[in-house]
Length: 369
Image (cartoon, rainbow, N blue to C red; front, side, top):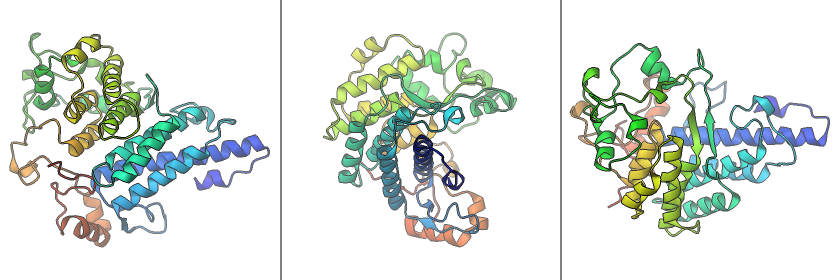
């Protein structure tokens, strides 16, 4: 960002394009810190990128949320579609400023709905602002397309390039999709013995030959990884409408999310599936979002933590669980304990009573009952 700020512009159009680039950086900044907070809770923020400070203090997670919402809103309001931005250097939208504006509005909906149980007023205003500003439309998405080779999809690197044969889909999602007779199973998994979809026992070491495997398409080196999609925002808007926000029909957004997921995976039968599994409040949103967010672990995990749907299997080993339950967050990296111990401990004391535990809840993760 500092390097772009120092660029010298010769024309008004160049100056606008420069400012657009800075706004895009602000949105990527907000997206990145949104993921960090959703993973850990409090994290270094105001001091995070100070190269002279190797022991940055941790900022309050809720305060970070407020700042990245403000930063994203300012960027959306400031983007000027009369000029370009990053051109071919933009690997997401090819410099299309209008699409970056939609990205920002979609991100506002995502961040806003996450706060719905702890700050409903801020959640409502943020979601409605993003929705009214124009979010992704059907088929639109922000994704990173990998070119293969050294720049292959991380899933390919883990599942294929590593040479390991110890990854199988877990019975948590396989059993749920079997129960719903979900047609997307064939796009997600292979058949075991050419007859059934069989997931490995969650949290156990499972023999590779005894279960279904990850579908071939997902293991391609060029398989894209989405940042934000129309499918995703549709489920957020369905929830927002269910909570009374002015964003249209909950059932329509729910139907859009399911249909868009079927289309992404090149699966037919969305209409019949929706007839069998129609919109039925937050429970139906939670289940279908969880299924649609397959291969997008943190996104699905965050939805489950907020809605507590669907019911997940418990890890079989107490050592791998969070006080006998499914973990609610990631613990801080061991490097932080070693290299930034005092600030890390202060954050742990403030949030979780001194114990950097998996069962600790991030500020927006409040019990639903």
